Image (cartoon, rainbow, N blue to C red; front, side):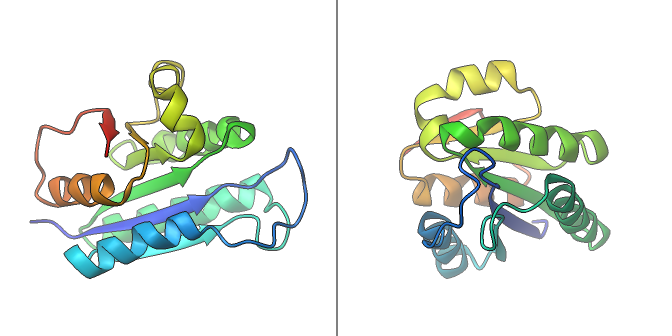
Length: 159
């Protein structure tokens, strides 16, 4: 088994450009399940914590995460949670990561991928997988298969 590490991102919301007082609890739930049941290290990055983070800064931080994980012999995964107004930002981030690190696994989840997974996978080729619905058990299974280098990952997952 290869070491895996996951970066969970709540992308910047440039549509409303407001400070969001609530933390991305869904990402915290995902990280807690992975840590508890599979001891998979997770980081959470809220790109709205002080207002929308500049996109180039987010890209650089994400690329640094992937490069560091790969340098340590790991198989990095970038998970992006997206509502509809953030889907193009999420797709641009996926494109930026894949352009530099084509072997990184890019997963989209959240409200928009739950309802528009087919369109996302068709329109945004840098996205490897979409998770629909509640993602805790689904992401756990994906990460365990990714860790085991299982060849049968598919691109449509749902609890």
